[in-house]
Amino acid sequence: KICPNLLPQTGPTGGGDSKVDSETYPVAESISELWYHGDGNKAGTERWAFAISAKRDWKPKVKSDVTKIVSVNSTEGRNYT
Image (cartoon, rainbow, N blue to C red):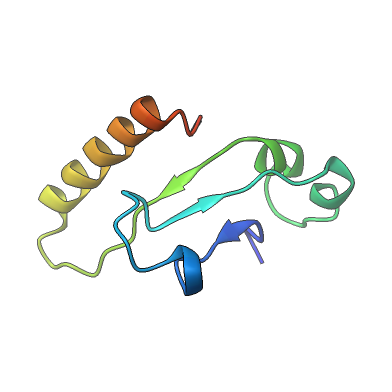
């Protein structure tokens, strides 16, 4: 797995528009050191937001998603990097 600490948007945490399609959650350094890809320490401590779309006209979707992520990051203090 390239990014094993992603929260899936399913079950009790999914379904609503939380402005991101997925996000990372912090993990202990002893866990992130075992990851094979990227910088495990940063991936285990930084918060990243993800937006996923299959729209053919993707540019407006990207702009909209980035605006929503920036907004929710500042209003809810999610601390995305």
